[in-house]
Image (cartoon, rainbow, N blue to C red):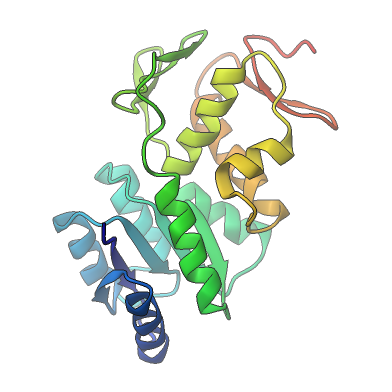
Amino acid sequence: MTSEILLIEDHKDIAAMVSKHLEAEGFVIDYADNGLLGLKLGLSNEYDAIVLDLTLPGLDGIEVCEKLRVENKIDTPILMLTARDTLEDKLQGFDSGADDYLLKPFELEELSARLRALLRRNTGISSQSDLKVADLILCRQTEVVTRRGIELNLTPTGKKILALLMKEAPNVVSRKRLEKEIWGDMPPDSDALRSHLYTLRKIVDKPFEHALIHTVQSSGFRMSVNDDH
């Protein structure tokens, strides 16, 4: 089955190079050269993934991502392209709803490999019974996450991390296993998992009285009503 990709990139040479490579890999490409058009296409069409540049005219990549994710509940996997490599920049990208990022300049083969990894892990969490830890529920059929009846807006990657932690609760899940489950053999770098977990905690734990996601020093992470080890 052919995957349809929305590429939002204002640099014409980069867009042409990426489009040519991805089309040769079997992807179908739709293209926008600014944030406003990219947002319009992302809202009006169903894509298998979105490749989103961070620096765009009209609306920047962060704004586009937030409007797709937060305002319109679009859960299409988003791969963000950026030349900004600080932890703060990465946190901002993940916080806005990005699932993965690729630093410029990048190899075209890595771009297509990351896209395929995103598509593989977006095939659904499972059709098994719902997952529940305290007042947190993940419905596997609809992939809706709620806590105290309040729906939580998570990225596809955030849901994958949460599902694994909930499934294994209250046991510890190692950092290595989480990275393997999410990125296979191609984790972006050591900041990626930390950034996703930071964003996940901010949504799942921060608005509520009791934290459910806990760090176990030198071991990994666990979900539990309390943080006793």
